[in-house]
Image (cartoon, rainbow over all chains, first blue to last red; front, side, top):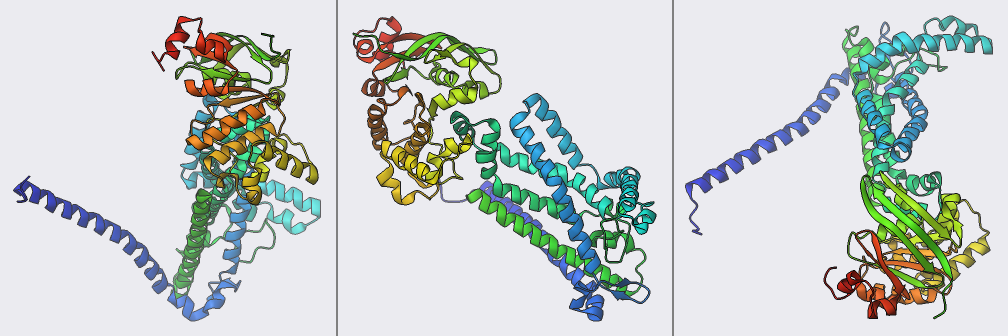
Length: 309
Length: 254
């Protein structure tokens, strides 16, 4: 009861201060890392900004020989593969999540959830290898078939490779599927039982209930989940690099070899020797960084609104 | 005393959660246009009993049931469960209006959920008439297009009653609908019951003796999954025939 601090109290207080300081340092280090990272990107990319300025964003020529660089083909490649993958994978993700939440019994759902988790944790180079040796030849055959169908000599000729935007879109669709399916499933599982039962008690079938009660309830969190999945697709590097074909021209069809911002960097950083070339690649990284931040903020805003609702 | 018309009859209902049996051979005859209270101590199977009537019991993983439920003479096991639920409505323990729907849409939720289209006039008419029946029309008239969850707890529960009776069921199950409400909202809902019973047959689960005595014409006393006693409320309260009922009424357990 004495007001006098005992020696053990003082030791406690000192330990407390030391621990607070240590965790503060860790927290500051994290923020500093991100800040320094950004600063470093800005510094190393300044050769590119000095040479091309803002038009770097919409110029579509990328020529290491003449040292003319523009990012538009990669920006387009990134957005086309990202949104394309999202478009293809979303119906499947919804289907998987609804099946697991409402139709599958526990004995079926649990192993499938485990497999989804496993698939989501697979290193992307494995997806890339599979893409290169299995998916790309199939896309190539499809391209030849499609080329003959529409009478395009060019498609038939290039179909022998199969690498390009379409292969990247399909591979990305598969890669983000476990992620978006499990995020949507999470939100479906928190729909209150009393709402579901309330709907069933009114004579709704399961499907009526899902459409009119469950899906509206998770609408916002589902959009948030999809935006996060899009973020993954936009930044995915290894697998895309392996199947997209390292084409630096503006793609005109889905079969064209192309590059995303990420795959361009991965494909070319070893060849980049001149400061402007290096700077331009880093400028690509900076653009990707900004896109990633925008997507994440967007997802956060949507998710928060979804929770408040 | 003349025999009342029977709207719902159960024959030897048994129910299980996994291996645990929670109802044992429950046979009851529920009179038409009356309030039948289901009372008994916690865990006696009251809620499970009403949930076997509309098949919600089977929604719980691992749950089973056996026995026959006759609705106005026809065996519900031969009917589509969706049709059974259209005839046997249910109001839950906690108000559960659909949060993504407005007050107006909540009243019509049953129609929307079962894919029945209504003309604008017909819809307006149902909403106004039904909200009037539950005494909510004047209170929410100006809030029809606000979220159903924006109302007070008591109003939400009456909204849930409205959406249930909007479907014109024969029987309405109330599963302790006032246990999450304040005394005033409870009183409003209790008053409502006597008005509703001219149109519907009501089965009302309660763990409150006084509430059962206040609101019901008939009472079923459950204990440990058995239907111990069933009869007119006055008769059961004044002269219970089973020792267990007597003990319960005199407060030996509850």
